[in-house]
Image 1 (cartoon, rainbow, N blue to C red):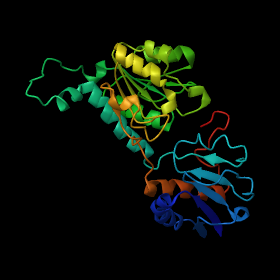
Image 2 (image 1 turned 180 degrees about the vertical axis):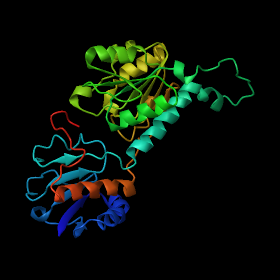
Image 3 (image 1 turned 120 degrees about the horizontal axis):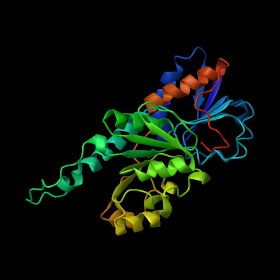
Image 4 (image 1 turned 90 degrees about the horizontal axis):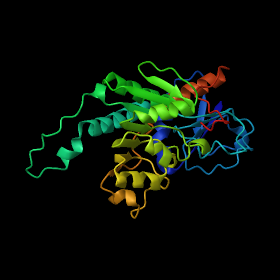
Length: 310
């Protein structure tokens, strides 16, 4: 019997439990899934967030902590967590992010806000947007989500530059890396998308100096993490016209307080951290696959690099 501990609140348990049970039913061994298993009898931990575990030392038998989300910044630094940690890759996250990012890129590319917000009897046909091939897009972060979004946009005809800490090769994208590549990636970005993980090294990636390297009138789209942007520098750039708009899905404090200036700023669109979410049915299949690999002695998938923080 393989004992799997689920950690999370009542709502996440109600959402995930039936899908996990269904996925585990196909495994070639018996599984016991519960929210209440003695620590020294747990083989795997499915970590759903908002969980009470802060000390992993008692889980002496556990082989893996499997996160149900892509982000691991709230757990990766826990010194008691010495067993492998896997983040969620797939589980509907990639397709959801592709749809959200593509929708907002097209919205800004086509200037849709002028017509959606301008239903006042004025015939606004004085501006024709360029074709996608003439609208350079840059994505900061070429993890699974960055690559998926970049390739989707490239298939629509956008020239896409992707920047990452280490050099990567992604079909259909111009890939750059390092400090020089960072400046190159910013210099052409009429639309900039942030999909970096949250680590000490990525804090305020988009600061005053970085914003100044963007073409005047650029659009910033952030479905990554709130800490990637210097909020005050962003607001100043919007007020000064260096940026024409910012669509933000993630923030340093969530929910975003009602008094936050982002809510009322005419050049900011706030969405409530909905760019992408794990789908329980698809995520359960990813979890079951990793547990099956562990029991077969195969390497786990999507393991977190503790030194990099993601």
